[in-house]
Length: 41
Length: 244
Image (cartoon, rainbow over all chains, first blue to last red; front, side, top):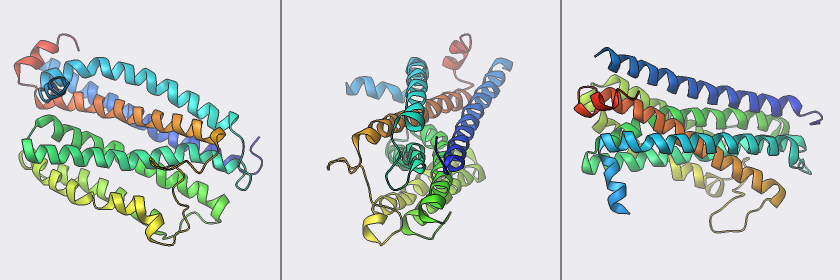
């Protein structure tokens, strides 16, 4: 499938997935940092 | 209905109620993104001119939509914060900025990747592309301004900055009508029939809903964390900390 353009399509999807994953991980990291801070109090 | 809505101005009620909303949104978001990606990659037909490259549309258009929608959401919250000084509005404005910047980066990069096979170039200083790039700088300026100022003053200054930056949103939206651009005009409009085949429209709408629900889950998740951090010394945080 995707004759000739496969590399463009998959690159675009992979880049998007990477950014969305980084966004999720950053949110989780923020949450864990806050929870640790509260539990320390 | 308004009474139910007003209650969200209370940090405690916002934190407790958004827990359930977040869970539902996460499930919905995953379902829509998996379905939309599978449909966009494997089910929809190739375009008669662009061929398979058209599949980039299913991520480029939703991310561009979210970049504008999130900034509009931030502006709404900034205005509400300036008028009523509601803490939640400031928090939502703060946490939405990095999410909006991420979607703007996705829109610009996927647009460049799509541009190479269809236009023959990665980038051109076209009105639509340039105004979207300016939006990225506005997002980055917004994030930088908040970090540069002491927390006490940051909310007010960032809210003013956000409202001024909103000028770019109609510029981006109407750029394809006001100037001669290489970028095509709108295929989707709230008031007109879509200029796109139904076989391509439904996965596109699913992906737009998926990206929007992803943005909502991330904004809510970060807002809840930020709220806990800001209110760490309040009694209600000590009550809910048993659950976290």
